[in-house]
Image (cartoon, rainbow, N blue to C red):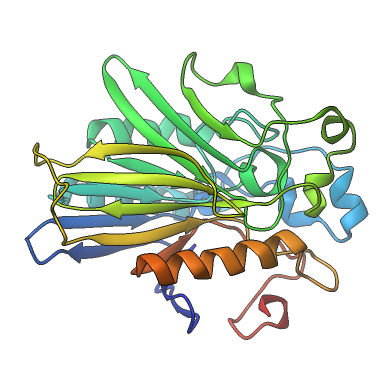
Amino acid sequence: MYIDINIFGITRRFPDLYYTIKYRLTNGVDIDIVVIDTVVLCGNSLDGEFYTNLQYLFSSSEKPSGPRNKTAAHDQWRWIEQQLKESKANYLLVAGHYPLYSTADHGPTQCLIDKLKPLLQKYNVTAYLSGHDHNLQTHDVQHLKIDNHGSKVHQIISGAGAFTTKSERNAKNVPSGSDIFSYPTAKWYNKIFNLGKLGFSTKGGFVTARMTRYAAEFSFYKGNLDVLHSFSLKSCIDASCHLDKDVLKFLVLGDWGGQSAKPYYTKVQKRVADILGQVATEENTDFQISVGDNFYPKGVKREADPRFK
């Protein structure tokens, strides 16, 4: 998990496995982004074990079986609650790779439902940002609103950087009425062959966020610049913000790592990169949150790795 501060210069901020980024607008509005490592918290899934595209195409998903290092997971859980408890920001975001709930192949992440969701509700987190299912084995983008006795958690899944599938395998395993939006929908041949897993029959997608003094607006883009869905969340200041020009703007993109074999990239990956660059230029975005994982079997150990090219 890292945040791209300079998208075109590929300058990345990755100080640790988990960390907090704090922003203050000139009008005094504070935005805290708590970046967490869900693999340390919950364990890895089958996605990190593929060696060939064929193996990947015909694979089935596997849920995280628990943290490899329970002490490290425990330490991070304590740190997460401390960050949420101490935050006084107008907007408090949490970003991780695994989603809480998903209607697609991977489905819900029970570890996060049990431990993270109560913290998001307790400390009134604005939204949870994630990837995982929407890149490798699910819909492209999904917005879920989870309501538990009046306490709502807004979850945004943006994992359509290089691959997509249209699975609805876990549609019945999310809270009733929580699936507000999902993209894409599956045609019959995609349900049979699941070509989106290899980057075919899809345009990809990403999410933009525009945060002002009074509201945060999230827009879901198709890989051809079509806006598919938008919604707004109020900040702690309840008023109109239409004329507020002091804005923090960023992008959310997950699972953009490409393939595990040459040429490493997919057509969707290149298309999304081009469109993302266009949006970043037009909107003058401040940074990008990448909610992906280390997909390659041998790992990516440095930013200069040729698989990033």
